[in-house]
Every structure is written in structure tokens, then in C-alpha cells.
Length: 121
Image 1 (cartoon, rainbow, N blue to C red):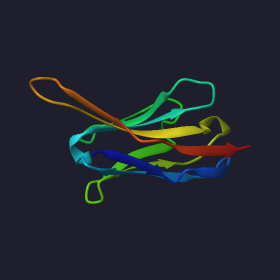
Image 2 (cartoon, one colour; image 1 turned 120 degrees about the vertical axis):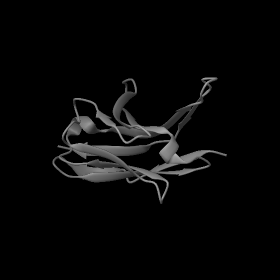
Image 3 (spheres, rainbow, N blue to C red; image 1 turned 60 degrees about the horizontal axis):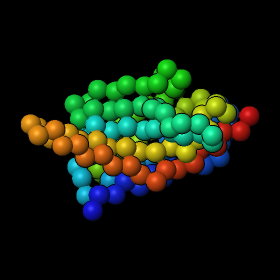
């Protein structure tokens, strides 16, 4: 059974930092395309950052330069280091793992349950 469990959310003042973790079981994270997404109250879920199995990273413009996505393969855990937090970063943050088989192109897509991040002004 595949599980992604996020942790590290909480309440922080603007300008502060938080580090989110996504511990995986049932899959090998290093083989998957990983991502952090967030959903603010009343808004659609949006991409925050992605990390491919080969190590390529991509960030939303709104967090580029402030957030860093990385993984620890030994711990089978994905991280999101968030610095210089702003009130508009307030959201539930979700971890995602995706894998597409070759050549049949079967997609495996997993989500965690999310962790709340609240940034006060």
C-alpha cells in the first residue's frame, strides 16, 4: 500500500521559514516525479514545485527563489524548504508522486492528505 504522509506545517509569521516533509512508503521516491502543490481556501489546487527522477526542479513564479524542493533517497522522503514566507503562501500543502510505465504508459499517481501552512502578517 502506497502512503505519502506530509508533516511540518504550522503557523509562522511573515518572513519566517518552514520545512515540509513527505515521507513515502510502498514506493521508491527516487523513481517518481515528485511535486508539492497547495490549495488555499476557496481556490483551486496549484503547483508549487516539482522534482523529476533525474533531479530537475521547477518552481511556480510566486515561490521561485524562496522555496527549495529536494529529496533524501536514503530516507525516502521529499522536502520543501520555504523561506521568506508571505501571507499569500497560506494554504494546505500536498505531496504528489507520479510515475508512467514504458511502453504501456500506465500512470500511477499518489497524493498525501496535506499539511496546513498559515502565514500571519
